[in-house]
Image (tube, helix red, strand yellow):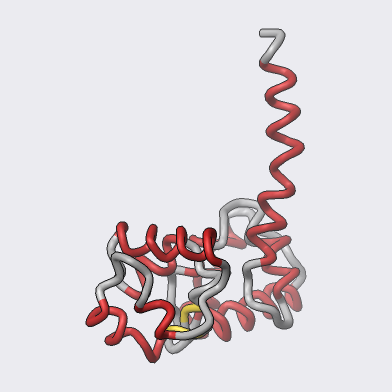
Length: 154
């Protein structure tokens, strides 16, 4: 019991740092801060980064979140929809150097082992500079990666 309170306080102190790191990996652009404030109080970015919706579908999804308790002004909600549609729309690329596990797995169709290989490579060697570097990551299926090449940006 004596240990529970310090552990809870430590967890609370660490939580903002994790959120800041998660927010930092989001693409820059108008609406980023609003998305961080409104959307990421309930879930991490993997929830929306793995989704590729049209603008209308993002509008419906955000409206659903508002009905569930997300709050913002009409202008903020519009900014959230615009940000998500631009960065995670149907034709949006995957930013391989900042994409979380779920986005790489779901959008690019990589296996769990391939995603882990990409994440480990990023952590160990830093950002990937080119598609050729991605292909050199041990465990990456070159044929699968080549098929997704148009969807990957560095």
